[in-house]
Image (cartoon, rainbow, N blue to C red; front, side, top):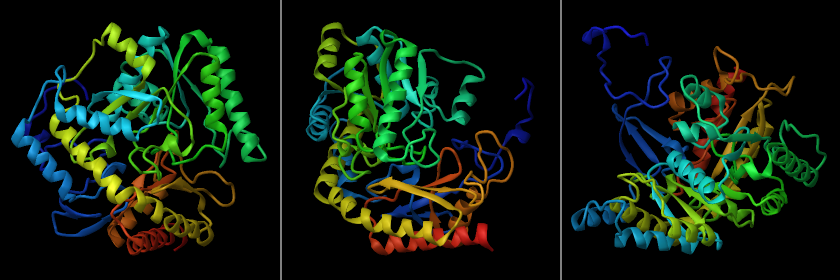
Length: 446
């Protein structure tokens, strides 16, 4: 926007709250009510929310246990400064450490996934006295200036760095098998090649300059891709060899989303640092944080930490977190494991039924469907460098407008995210995948 005076009537809008990721080409839905896995717009239309909003409302939209816990905390003490101690905050920290990988011993609370990843980078740099964080291409770690620098989605990164940028990062290639940058004939070979590539990057960046490797254990909005067996074991070994911290971003994959408490637990590897957000409260209140191992916690205890936020570890959010962890444990972790095979089977049918569906991948209740031209094997449209109509977004719009089912956009946009709340059943899966299939037919095959 140029620096000029704008008449107030020209700038006014019937929707004065600017949506995040706002695009003038589309209008944002106005959601006024929600129940379970379904939301309702201002006209009373019902939608099956099969993307858990931003892959975060894991418990659905009306979990009474979480709501009651928040209400009780509000009546007891609504706020305690983040520089002080609080019993609810400590209770949640202990609950989280009980379910986290055994290597983690202490929790630093924050507010959002973006600032959790920034805090993790700051902690890693401080304790290692090194400045670089390695992240993989096709990763998303947030959209604030620090986290946006670690993110490799060019749409996010370039939106931030066109005016300012931060230093101290390098990137490596992801261990993906579909349209892979590697030339591997097997999963084992892919794991070896991708891990060798990370080691190559480390050597060429200078191991002593690298504080940590930050990676999602299963791709988030970047495409839900899983690593080949053995990759994370090699990554752990490489980090140990060069004295580099292994940081896992569990903002999207944590709290049962991928079938275990945390995605890295499905890989059997112990991280040094783990970041979380989204599902920790089922998104009933903003909360995030960083879990660290004992060596890092001891150094922080000895040296202190000079960063913090007013709302970090808010007691009401922590009360929601305690209740959410109990709900996952009692009802929902098992349900994810039970429903995952059925969701995968229905999604695999899309590969068979539609030539434009190039790949289906994921774990638990976290999946992506990638669209490619069957003649070339390349995406129909790649928003990282192309402008114009995106047919995959047409599938998204058609599913919502004609079938009342909501899916999520991926980064890049040639994939759609399928990540429902955990309170669904098989009939909801059938409704969603049938809607998805019909929308693909309408967009690509009519």
